[in-house]
Length: 597
Image (cartoon, helix red, strand yellow):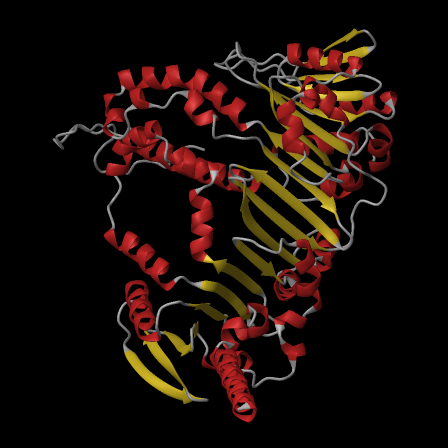
């Protein structure tokens, strides 16, 4: 009886080991890290660890909750009906959820001989047949029907090659992985690494020193990440500059060559979006650390604050000789040269910490913006400011002095928004802006040393979300900014819709949500940058991050410029909604001249 029991235990152990071994072998590729699948010389890698998890986190983010507000949905209903409806988009999203892709990646592995080698891949949850059907459908939608197909056997895998004109796509299914590339050799090498036939791990991206150095600076869990090795790109740019005999500044070329890697990641936490950017390179600032001294100028109406290290004195000689700088900036540097102002004079006059603040009082129509610089030597600073005011011979600046502070002002012609460029110079600080009243008030706050902004709970809570900066810090009170924009622009928009009824065809401004509905989902946007051992780390947190805000503004600016151009084009001649012929403003045989810049 005892012997039978022992045999049963041994048999059970052997069966358990066999099941474990088979499962381990079958999941060997699935557990492989993406960086271990790619060659060491990989130039760019984008990685999405878990699509469904990321989508769920986004669904609970502040920006998504704002979008789901009933008042917001009611306002967007009309403009959304104007957009083309594509059932394929929702179908594709359902198919992605069905596949439940893990470790999706896009990699640029080579740019040799002016030929890009690209590899993509992901793990899927569905059985291979269902996954293949879905993925084949995606390829057909994106690339159309191939002009030629062939199959290549490799290590018990079938690599399918589809030709679309001059473009060929090689794809393969490896257990629960899907891989594709525009280069057959890349697919074969990837399969060798995935199936463990390549034993030399030193040839993978995971072993690259720059990649491994960047890793500890990124969060362990993220929604998406990227890695860029700029060496190949910088070498090509340097060769291109040499070929065309570029006159670029030598220090700029050296700076590009010093960058070892660029990587970043985005993740969600408590409804907010966090992004992180790491640039591996030597430290540029040797003896300077950000103090945020200009924070003392902030008030409870401040919605924007920025502080950064900007050593203008270190770059003034190069900028003075650089080509391509136009307008007032070029005049400033020319004036400095004519006045005998050198880089050493600037360094002796001013500190390297540039500050900027924007206030928007509730009773003001528009905000006020100021720039600040610490003053080290007032006499030398005065010489530089006087040179700036004489850069434009047609500008008339007036000078006054009050409480040992010198004020320089230049009245501007009357416009919709009154602008009076003003510079205040004390023995502690230089403050420049477009409103003499706000400049004088800022000088008084600098003297008192108290700061309503730094003492506010909103600012203090936001500042704790990012590490202490060493060379850059930015803060935007998104809720305050939106409430002021709403108060100023809503009446104008409603009035414009009354005079231009065509606006109501796309949007109903009477349904614009109340400001408090929007602002309850808008927390401050905060960003900091520091040097951490072997590179610069920039972090940003908010309902959207600082980088995303900048991209959004750039897109909106482009859309606005296109709309203005279209509107300008529609006014170049006579026309009517019925399409009836109308007289032209110029002879029919004469083409319209191009618009004057």
